[in-house]
Length: 417
Image (cartoon, rainbow, N blue to C red; front, side, top):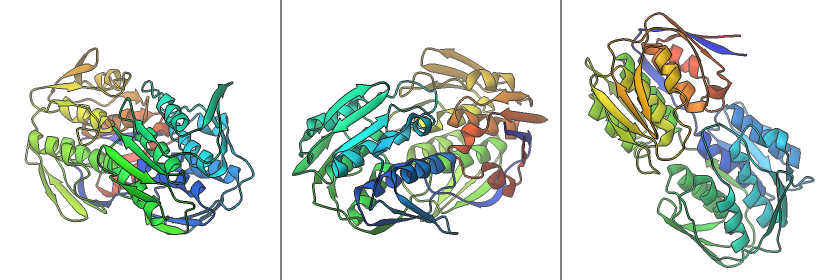
């Protein structure tokens, strides 16, 4: 099993290019199921979850082609298999996103209940309730969602909770439905906007993406389109945290403004200097950082996917920070590993109290989920001596060549088997 070996204590400096967003790419890949035409995607990140999704689509009968510039062509003209099996779905919750497109275009779907990171309950009942409201008949049998429908009917759906994949699944189902669908309490994440822009390029009629009310006017069919995947805001945030924690000075290229305001605000509060252009961000620090308290919440508030990385930064900042996690109940699994490196963290329920220490010491640690592993890498970059992060397959699910990019910024990091 792969591990990362890090010799810490080196400030990150230099420039690196950001990859496309995993959380935008996965639903957009599934959107290819909505048309017999070809969907051409640019800036697709090279990640395990993307490979899994492409394998799943190919197994259904989607024609998949790759080019040397991280471009993917997808043609779902003829599907011979309307099933998403457990073997592929178990590693990745986002595979539930084939459900909406399959049922709206083909009238049936068989999708395994999903797996993914062990960070807490992410129920799919909101997806199911929404599809049932549009006229689908759905049963759960032996761990599979079995769905059937004639043409779905547009309707008014109020989501009980803000759910990103639920919003995306129902939005995709609604684009080919008969009539108008209104999604209230919709997720407002930039990745939802990116999916809506891709669907509109394919001929859909979607208004309001990025607000909490999305209106979709159903059309008879979608067509060929080309779309560029947005930059990965969590990768941007992770690299900015790593640079701040190590006392570095980096420039990230291929970024976009306004998709990370809450995170940049917290970095500035901690004492980092941040400059932004249209497609770049520069972060520099002059000396010590101040601990910053934060509370995770749906976009545009502070993202749960950046909580662990800020915990690593707060571990070596001056003062005490209170970190409150409101999205996932198991999202403090990195705490005991950070403690192994010398961090001073106490957990009470869904709150962690982080007391900054003057230095971390290298140690052997184990990744438990995707973002936890990123926090351990940041802590390893800061720590004195050698840190070994085991089980980095979690990291490969969401970060494109992270050790190569960190190496470009001067980190002493290598992958070992």
